[in-house]
Image 1 (spheres, rainbow, N blue to C red):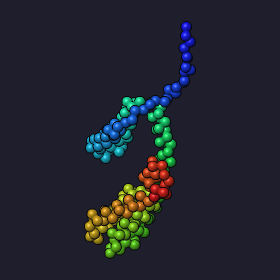
Image 2 (cartoon, one colour):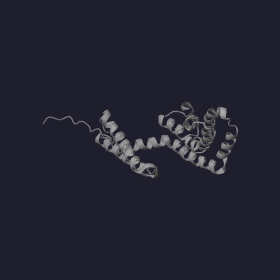
Image 3 (cartoon, rainbow, N blue to C red):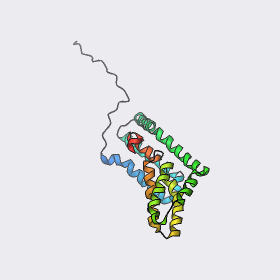
Image 4 (cartoon, rainbow, N blue to C red):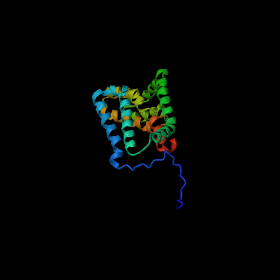
Length: 208
């Protein structure tokens, strides 16, 4: 009997799976589903969608993405490793989001923002009202890191003054939003300004 060459068995890692490359349409399935569900949710619930139903839609979008991954031979462990890595890279930004929200509320309750509004309104001159709106809103949004807080506090006050002075309300609203979003974008305390570089993997001040 002729001897047969017996090749040693090479152990294979069960976690190593050859993934199939996705085409563009498969990759866009979770995006389309998420956008469609969010649009339907906002259309159905309106402002109440922010109370929790939008978060449920995000979970459904994640489930659809997981199903697409399973069909392309991506293991559950691989998905969890990527999720953990993404959470780890954005944990600092998430903490800042929570702290910024708490800080904005604290400043409102303690009177810091109303004081800034009061002294800002004292220096307004009708001849330079619109440029002053932009500058005041930019300063406050840089200090607070929130365009929404700026628009909801000093923005409302400026709209009232504009109506009393006869300044067009549309132009005043544009000046308020321009200053608010300008300051929001360059403020180190802004939630989106911190989140964007964290997702892109760059430094905060490089992004600014």
